[in-house]
Image (cartoon, rainbow, N blue to C red):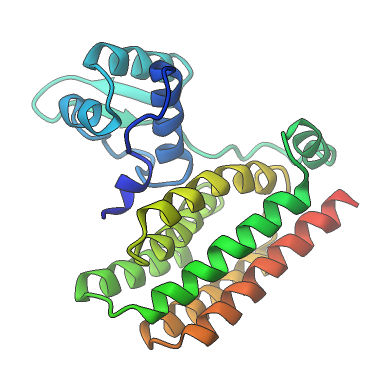
Length: 239
């Protein structure tokens, strides 16, 4: 299963338009389709989402009006991602507002994330990975380290999704993607701290190395430490 199949999966309800918009937004905000890159062709994307091409066009039109995508004509045309994370000044009350508007509480989101992603790291390390899976994981981890403030959150999300994906469990990968959307709403409400980013890079290297070496216990421990650090930051900014 490719990483974009984690999000570009058939819609589950009668709200085809709304869920198509949700799926495409997930692919953009989680960095599965980075800024400047092209979405899959219309026919392919409609098939993968399980919606009509007319519904897909309506969803893309709405996202274009909202500034998330842009359409280009010509031989190399298509629908391209225009979204870039905001670099607006930090609002000290932003996190409290996000938490207040969530359908659940902060501890629920963070506990669910811990269970999903620690389990994903352990499961990924326990598998015999293909050369392609190993290269993909190393490549994304390196891309995170080369990111800037505008791309860090998306690339960080891609790495965590890639770990879930190589477990071989589509259900787990989808759950991690859905939870990551809620986590990113929280993370986007706090400022990026350079020291924290550098620490995260080191933790990511430890997680990836443990997975590649097949050490499930170390992979789980490294991921748990990484997630605990993020949770501490969120609770600190909320206090």
